[in-house]
Image 1 (cartoon, rainbow, N blue to C red):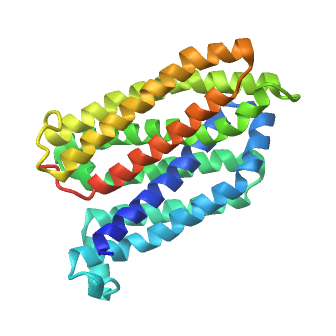
Image 2: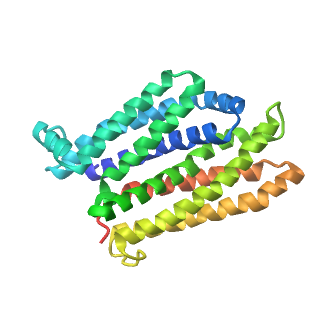
Length: 292
């Protein structure tokens, strides 16, 4: 495996882990009743701990990998002078330091009482996601255009992460719709996810289109560039996710009210998670490529 391929894997693991923490925590804090949020949050605690561990490990690995890519390959993986130069003299190094601090704070939230843990994780994960705008294509411009691009990219990351990450606790809440003392809270939580999903999807589409214009100046039409081929694939997958979300909301949710069948809702949620992870993988890949 080359350092470039290893970096793509690390980027995917890091992004997926932080998105899970951000989306699930924000959803439980903002749209779920306190009692239901506590129960679901406790069930997700070990998954959140695993995600934080993955985010920490991938963060540690990314700096030497970037050093190897900038230098002469694996031989420069831990070269002290190269590591120091990348850390202190590049946007990549600045972003890495912010991400490292954010991930450490994210780990510290695991010792907080349950009523504060979800809020702490949501805030820290949001800051970690926003730190991704400090380097890469979001930093390719200068002046006011760079500021606008970073803000737009931040909106894209937070909206997309909220949509994808929230699907995990939603999967745990779905079985509660038909039984149990929290049935009413579960119904409200699912409907709030659906309503919030409309906002998240709109923001994802608008900010995604804006990002494409800011980077390419138009649609990805030159497929001789790997970046534009992969971006086109991402757009197709996102459109598929939106279509599934629409079918779920306007076909399967009303159907559930009549026959209480959870299977279509679960299939839609799992499919969206798989497609969402595909998007994360594509972004991790083409984020390392030249757009044109």
